[in-house]
Image (cartoon, one colour):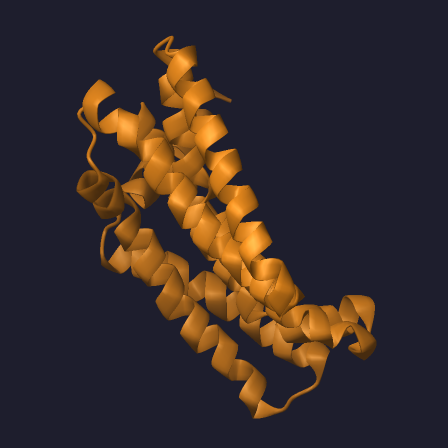
Length: 197
């Protein structure tokens, strides 16, 4: 169940977060006006940061589900100490560096959270990375193509109208082409729900 949770949530989160990052400039201009464009680098950083969230939560939920609350508490204490140290080290270099350090902290969090599951569930780092690699790589490819649309120098609305369908087409098409297991699972689940109704 932990493996399924990581696979499915990563399959959904990575394209959403990297898609949002790719559309960040025209989206901010449309929703918040151009005066908010300096926030775009922060938005991109936090989109990438939150793409890793399924890895963290799934590992923690597995530890709690197995009844190891003492391990959970120790992990949280360790992470709080590391987080405070990173914050103290980067606060002198400006908000952008602090935001970037949050991405580093997220990766460290994952390594800490996943460490006990190597023993408790026999679910290693390499297996977890292998489970998220397909949607992560496909999302990164989608990000690159969608992001390049902004260089056409079209209006913000037209850019978004091209970027969003293009991103969906690339991700769904890539999922079908490479027969991603998570895509097949979600598709079969939806078909099952439709048949029941």
